[in-house]
Amino acid sequence: MSQPFPGGEVTVYESDDGEARVDVRFDKETVWLTRLQMAELFGRDRSVVTRHIDNAYREKELDPKATCANFAQVRFEGGRTISREVDHYNLDMIISVGYRVKSLRGTQFRIWATRTLREHLVSGYTMNERRLAERGLDEARQTLQLLARTLRNQALVDETGQSVLDLITRYADTWRLLLEYDEDRLKTPTGAKPGTSALSFDTAVTAIDTFRRDLAAKGEATSLFGNRRGETLEAILGNVEQTMFGEPLYRSGAEKAANLLYFLVKDHPFTDGNKRIGALLFLLYLTQEGIAHRLDPRGLTALTLLIAESAPSNKDLMIRLIVNLLGKSGV
Image (cartoon, rainbow, N blue to C red; front, top):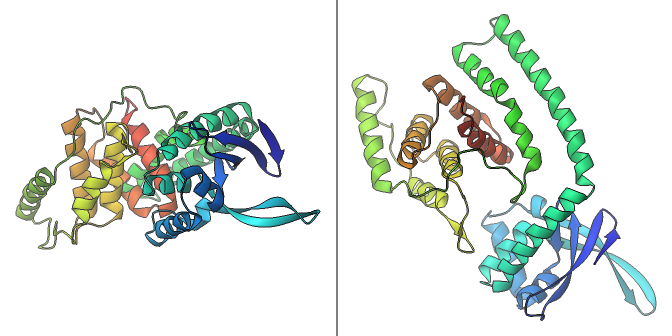
């Protein structure tokens, strides 16, 4: 049963074994629990939950501003009604803590929360908000197209800049999918297939060495090109294949390819040549997975430039843009 509270609803969740029962808050298109509620849910001491939350923040796995919020909690003390602001943590943190304490209830709660969130989002107030946002996207697209035409017609951008403009304006409609972001509602582009194999470290190194020699022969690479910085490359290749609760974090080959390109460009695993090597390994993985695409060299250059110039907060936007570009037959 749900009941309203300022800014959302409260729904009672009961674990499958019946030993945990918590009031779950719904707000800002996610669910929220306090530290005490997580302790009750996972059957752990509150200090254990606190330690794992602190570790998640210290290791920069999660952002406190995005995963923690204050909600008023009403209690009855001494015949009086007392309202206090209490820290609540969203589903990302709840899943992280559940994973760290290796709790089966964490998996059960994630499944329940995802299903219940979908029901709230489909039938609740967010539908109206989405319609308004879509209207705003239409206006933004028209403005972007006007800007692109003006810059192009007035010769205010060079050839590379025009490629970037073409890439953005031609596929601006794919950004609408950002409004549908939800684990169970974001539509996978037609033809997307699960990833079947990993890009091995040895394969990547061999391709990079060959690429370096070819560029050096043309005088297009310095001695620093492709020199690895620590174990960053190994970490990126491993992160693309990571799992959570026994399931792949990135479900399709296109998602893996998109994350591979993004991290190779943004994390600078090489002293020089990160964008070019990122594009190389991106294409290598697409070929390995049999993922068709029609990205020409100019389009791929524009894509790596967009990633390089994007803010870290735009990561999800860039990943979904790449995935949906791969899903477009006309790319």
